[in-house]
Amino acid sequence: MGVGKVLSDVKPYLAMILLQVGFAGMYVVAVASLKRGMSHFVLVVYRNLVATAVIAPFALWFERSVRPKMTLTIFFKIMGLAILEPVLDQNLYYMGAKLTSAGFASALINILPAVTFVMALIMRMEKVRLRSVHSQAKIVGTLLTVAGAVLMVLYHGPVVPFPWSRGGHHDGAAAAAAGQQGAGWLNGTIMIVAACVCWSGFFVLQSNTLQSYPAELSLTTLICLMGSLMSGAVALVAERRDTSVWVIGFDTRLFTAVYAGIVCSGVAYYVQGIVSRQRGPVFVTAFNPLCMIITALMGSIILKEEINLGSVIGAVIIVVGLYALIWGKSKDNVNQVADASSGGSKGGAAAELPITSAQPNGNGKHELGNGHGHVFDVETPATNGHY
View 1 (cartoon, one colour):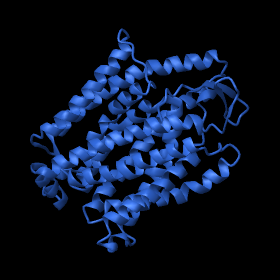
View 2 (cartoon, rainbow, N blue to C red):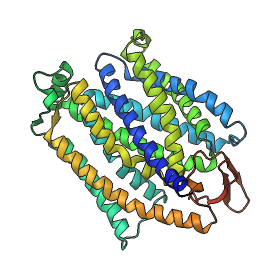
View 3 (cartoon, rainbow, N blue to C red):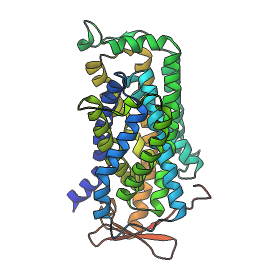
View 4 (cartoon, rainbow, N blue to C red):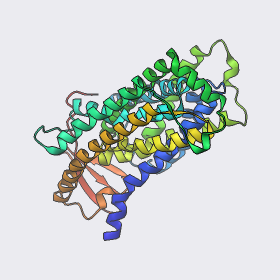
């Protein structure tokens, strides 16, 4: 019983750590493909088509008996999710990373938890008590995160040498260094920040949508399908003068589309949905620093990218602020566990994945079953008119 509870508690952490490793790989291979001429509009379309093809069979089979009915409200929420993530976030991030570098983009994206926290606070999904030390940590962490991001933009400083990066740099590093001195670097930074805002909105809306449509695989499939259609329309207009960009062979471009589609769209949306429903959207975004470190190392080794002192200092400040925010969130998790225990849940059963059934019980709550005979009453928060 004790071992099972420990494993249940570890699952969300392990899932998010492995997901960050997957994201780091995608950032590096995507930037490599984009700087070799691949269209980011086409990459987004192929990425979501692959994700749809891979996840759809699992959704049709495993959720055939628990999938809620589609309503007009849920459909509009899914359209909103598709616009925020596949269409806006992915295109903006790829454009920003292409104009800057994989390491810089993955470092700047660490403002994501702070932006998500502010959005969740506005939507009343987060609580702040100014006299509480944990709430003060949330606020200080958010401010530090923003300060670190601003420092990364305003101060570059000298290049930080790595042992494996000595003795010449790849052309991509020279291009990044040249772009850093011009308007391209600033435009890329703005695009990454805008992508971060869209991604935060996606997490908040996804958490809200799962309350009324608790079928993660089906929701993932629908998001990727709608994203494919919408981003396809955008790509047809944007690349109307050059149809050759749609042709890809058995090279890094195909690998990038397949890898990003399976790992960073299909699997990521599903895992993020489960963890977000358990721990909230802020917890999901709290593991980005690990991705930043892995991406910086891989980018400097594979792409021969240069990392500036300003990026390092700013990233450190962001990480300090980020974990102040996580420490503040830890109190929320303790309260949630206490509430679940008082509601009659047994051991660590409430944390078991995946949840396979959700039915309203007529009391403003949903009965959630985990497929092992355990049923929990979970309060559905008021939406206050949002979404």
